[in-house]
Length: 361
Ligand SMILES: *Cc1c(COP(=O)(O)O)cnc(C)c1O
Image (cartoon, rainbow, N blue to C red; front, side, top):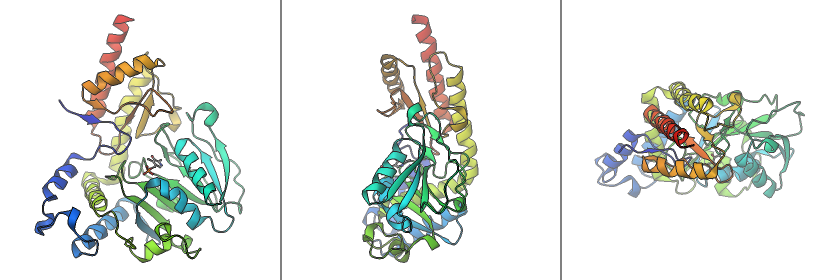
């Protein structure tokens, strides 16, 4: 049975990458050592991290005046790090409250003493649409924080809100390299690796260099300037996760880069949305214009039917389609590594399930 893993994260990886990891595992580049065993100060690792940075720069067209930093601590630590490094003038940020992860970002910023103004929220409609930025007051906020893709609620910005002269910080954790954004539209971008870039334990920060170094003596492990100066090797970096991300980046390049990923993600998600929109059993609750390409929630409205469907899907090799506990229902995550055949298998399964359902109801 072919298995497809629709997990929201940690998530499915490209099969050729898993194979490469398997081949490399006992002895990396005939060194007699596993990547798990090599020093982060070794020339072997120098090659790994330098290639990963360069490949990411190529894939995202990252301008030279942006730093690429490799952190630990997940997207979540960046909810602390970003305000500490970047909210240095007004000590106040604007937030577009688009759901769980935006809310978490605001909460962590408040914990380090930064004022957080919610500029718009769609909480009252259960985040089934994106909040909209209107009349942003300039010279008020160090930056506006957005979540480009809302992993749990299934919305995504295809067009970035215009913040004028105010910086924009984007949490791209769940659509990093999955659709095209211009790095120049952001002062900083953060993304945990375990959705589109490999395995947990690594978080990428891309930040414009004039924005860093404004505060001295930050805690070292969240200090952007220090990490930039030390090439992300202030202490032991997550060696294996950076190696795995490097393989994913090479795979992405071979596949045709981010434009090709966006094309495929539109096709995969379009297949599922089309089916859901024509189904009499399932509903995709998110407003069409705001739909995510990578995380697709859907419901039947009956928790017992949802539970039955999820257990039958699991038995059929379609794994991890249970929705987040805050939304319920189902969610299919169709990240870069999910092949079209996976989306097709899911739609075939849902069609059959629906036909059986109407025969007995
Ligand atoms: C998963 C996720 C996070 C949190 O990531 P951790 O690595 O678990 O801290 C933050 N933001 C978004 C949009 C996510 O999808």
